[in-house]
Length: 448
Ligand code: DOR
Image 1 (cartoon, rainbow, N blue to C red):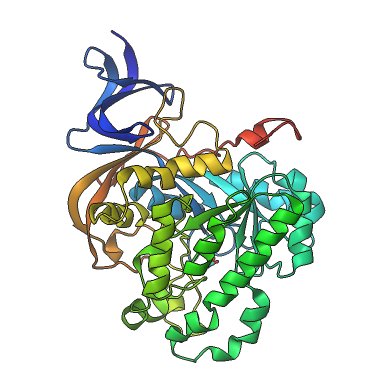
Image 2 (cartoon, rainbow, N blue to C red; image 1 turned 90 degrees about the horizontal axis):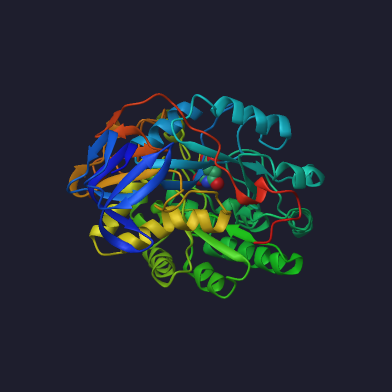
């Protein structure tokens, strides 16, 4: 008989070896034992009868707006929204103010996050024409998820539109870099297609060809420089087919928004569904689901991009692009699991194992001995209605207000501590930087 800090008892674990009953014992923030642990004791025992226990969900794309845009969100409120939705770790984006493009700006974010964020965190460093020479050092800073490049402009001023600029970045770096892939030249050309007051013209302006053209350029550059690339929020059926032929260099993210919403949402939600790359028609949505089904998609990212209701109410195209998403990722995707669109195992693959695999995260992404005890505990059969009122983000709204789902996050466990239980925040902010294998070793010693 052994004694542990905590045991999560009587739950059904969804993991690398399938979905089966198992107790999970935790010591020192890590998983210590798995299986039938009826004879063992613990300081804290949580009964999970009727619940499923998943490896902690890692959202690999969020915008938490701090510093500089705290009226939309900050690191505390964004991470509160994350843990209320069952998310245990986030990768945060560099289009803050100042931009996260220097060592000082990066270290400032880590300092602000420490003691204030409710989940574990990593920050992307923005790649620019100006900071290429420093990127090899910057991408290796503790807590850095890698380099993020905007090839098409979106919220903020980060932009590297040209092949020479993207090539120079790929040449400089060693880790996998993440890309917002829309062709800036085509976006510029097509700007007159935006119809003032009509957000349905947003996907006409930022058309599928703009995304495909950029992704083809990016993949060619990745081959040329022999580097690994991650294509964020893929939004077209054509890119998904193209990327299936380039899995040697390319990994793929999709968002719950692109899997759930289609062109009909513009009539209902107007500028509130406006994002970059845009929500498109049903054929593209089906193409993205095909990528989930055939395995081309590696990870889910919510692209949580909060803007205030007042900002979103501005007439198109003065309305900013982006929707909240970190808190609704788990319930929206569990609803898709219940509808038979993907298996629970594939959801675990996309939300935990996938991020760990493609970003070389240390000790996270599976429920296994020695791993961080990050757990997302869900009630697969619970029927709930998502409301703006439930959203902890400062933005205070979701495109799914009033949407009923089956499947709900009921517990968020971070390194063994219960952070959220049954909708209540139950412990103080204790988020830490996520560790990456590539930055734990001396330069040059890592072979992927
Ligand atoms: O719609 C978007 N909003 N897409 C992005 O790439 C950026 C994001 C934001 O930061 O608002």
